[in-house]
Image (cartoon, rainbow, N blue to C red; front, top):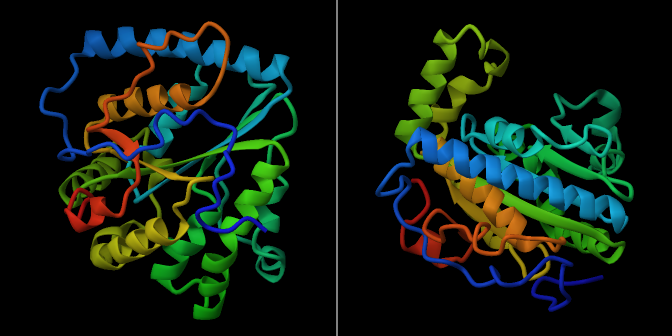
Length: 282
């Protein structure tokens, strides 16, 4: 099995392999609505090019989105998939595990949703639930948590060896911004589907979620399947830079290289110094 630190390449480009220097959680200058819409349009054209290449070359790609409640996972995924072919694009957002799920091999629930050739699959939360909400809320035992933490990289490396490309994004939101968004959900009649019984614990257990996040990032970041951190307090800049980063890491024909360069102060490959220097929300 591949081990943590294995130097085998993941099948994605390596120019973003070095950790950038994340800045504060909000950009110094926020994007105007016009700039956001124009840039998003151009990036969505790049995503169409990527999908065309994916289909032509029989590739299979998984993109994982993790982050606290209200970090912007839904909105980011929506902008990625908006103009892609629904036949070759799937979004996976699993609910509460069934009794059968709980009695099965932990990863079995997720394996059935992995892509075949020509497909792009985006996980809105993933197998890392065990390192986050399940750990914090006591939905798994200590033994189950430790087993996950010791086996998840072997699982991911096996996927890479099978020819799958995997990107892992963690959207990092501040406590104040999370509180603002959770309150906003209650007042928005179109966002009622986002409200969860667990929302009230997002802020009450902020410190526990912070500790779980830090442990997850430190122990499951590696050269083959690295974590990519995105500051998530400003939705437009988060969406734009996550899409740029995603495109910059994947090979496809006709890429506009300068367009897809992300701002390293907003999106960067994880490094333990991010925690030590307080660059992640606390």
